[in-house]
Length: 161
Image (cartoon, rainbow, N blue to C red; front, side, top):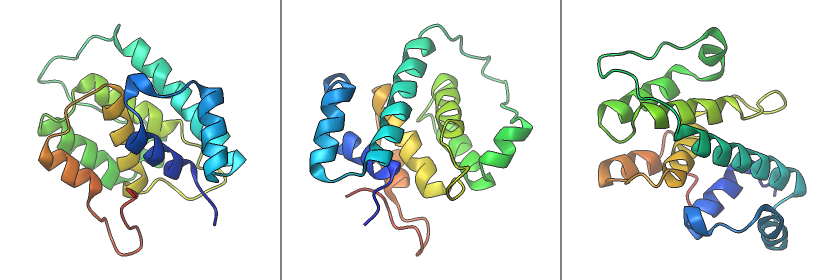
């Protein structure tokens, strides 16, 4: 069975607190011993390193004015389907994320290499949202958590184990 980067991200979410996640080398050994494939481990570790960098840089970001509206660039529109953009808008409107988290989510979604694989789906996007919220230690109220875990369709079951 092929294990994908998203499976590793879900595993990290389920098993570690943001501040207690092992160093990349130790995490790679752990993931390998569990049976995750090397390519997926490398992708996940690179993605997690980018998440850490984005988190550190987010401390210097200024929140936009409350009445401002996020416009997506052409590349973002191509990479993020309407259901993903709608979901992030929903989370922001519901107060589950702020503008900084929104930008981190978009940046991390754009960092996923879909050149050789399937396009971004809502299920995969939700894993990215979950990981950004996990790293920023944002509160997951019941509504937001249920929305992140709910089944999108019959072909894409929830990714949580």
